[in-house]
Amino acid sequence: MTLKTPKCLICNSEAFTPFLEVPNRFNILESYMLVQCSACGFVYLWPIPEEMEKYYEDAAYQPHQEKAETFTDRLYRWVRAWNLNTKRRLIKKYHKDGLLLDYGCGTGAFLSHMKNAGWSVQGVEPSEKARSVGVQNDLNVQTDIDQVSGSFDVITLWHVLEHIENAHEVIDSLSRKLTPDGILVIAVPNRDSLDAKVYKSHWVAFDAPRHLYHFRTQDMVRFFETHRLRIVSKHTLCFDTWFNALLSCQMESAVLRKRFYAFGLIKSGFIALGASFRGAFHVDSGSSLVYIVKCLL
Ligand SMILES: [Zn+2]
Image (tube, rainbow, N blue to C red; front, side, top):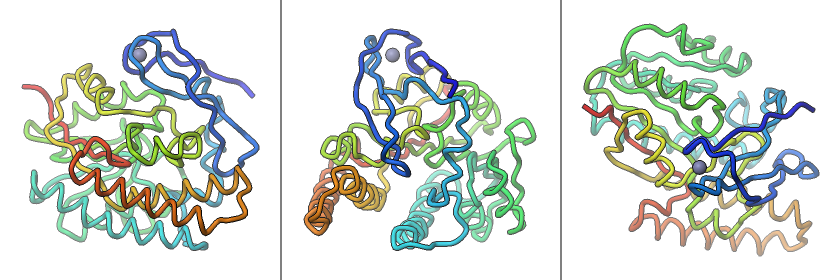
């Protein structure tokens, strides 16, 4: 296997110390190294496998699935449906309607939802399998950002930034496609969350090797500053916390071969409850965070 050795995405330093060894949730016998930048504290996957596509081909990878087959898949669908309304209401605070681009749109569930709500929508999705589902559903989905023309009032990246190796390049291209009053909406898992701290290497949102970066709010602030972008507001997606706690519990049970799975489930419920309660008062401790970002004038 060929490997790539990235520098820190935030400060470009090459110095790091080992942070955590984490399993691949679809093959727990495989593990990957997360490292922490010695200069700024940012955590990232090191090294990166060269042929990344195969890690998205697992039949159980929910964002690219057409059918819900297991209990977890059905729960993912339910959480996604709930989150679609939450996302639309959040965007409505800034723009009531207009042109929307969803970067990394998967099978196009969010695009369809917004199209039905009266928005003019386009998507970008590199996975051919996921993109074909969107196209079948009469959505305008391109393979690459270069194929998209025009400007947008809203550009969304729902749990996408942490997957993109050339993240700086992509954010540069996307911010150039914003209208003067346009917003970027970027959701990422939060390494500072309560569930991340409790589950450690079993936290499902480390999702190695698919997730390359593990952001905290201070990392996002520095990342956006590089692109002359500023954070307008931050929000949590409440049900992400419950979903992440449940999946983390499943991974912990699988890795540690725990016999008393029921105790793990109860523990995940308490952690999700605690994280949701804390997240209601301290947005920065939510399991995932949504950043609303605008260009600096
Ligand atoms: Zn750094």
